[in-house]
Length: 261
Image (cartoon, rainbow, N blue to C red; front, top):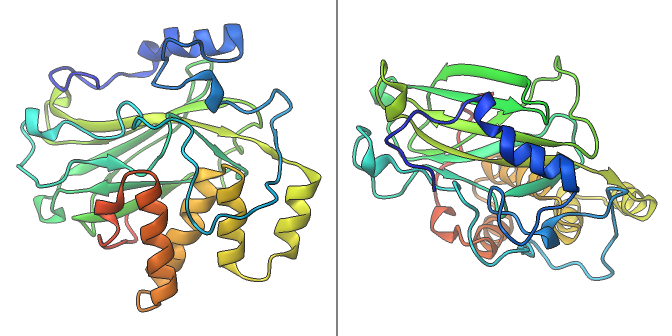
């Protein structure tokens, strides 16, 4: 995990890791942002459709949590909290069908502190694709950022690095608590497209997304169902199962807010 005593890395500091991915196409045994080669999809970026759906459990490709999934607020000037700032991700590279995916985070800090959060997305050329700074609301709890439709969609087959920072000290960025990882948009195979078109309920789509390793689509669909149907026991059980499958079951009962869209 990156040292919290320094300012969170900015675009120019991602050069080495992104260059390695571009140079060799897959990640070698030594980790680059915590990802092993077996986590990456085939070069045609089409995902095979599993014959067996596995409810809302997610098959994590790496048993170890990804680097920088949790923040280090305890070693900064951030207030003491029982649970760390956490990105709701299973892997260091996470896949989506969406050109404008949604990213989810657990923020342990109270919105009464009137602090700001920053969300940044970079492409493989280190160009800033998206950046926003907003006041945090609806926390402690789970919040989300969706890439706006006004932006060009993420390109299929390209990796994008994102970073979510909580500004613990309004004037000292080195004190930020942050998490980061990568997202890649992939194309659906014909069989996957057919199965999604045949799905008649959101939970069926959740199962299909999960069976095909599409993390952002799985999480977003189920998180929105959970938020909008708080009293539904089946959805709550599916939400708990999904988070437990990636080692984040301790966050299953946290409130899901509408912050940071």
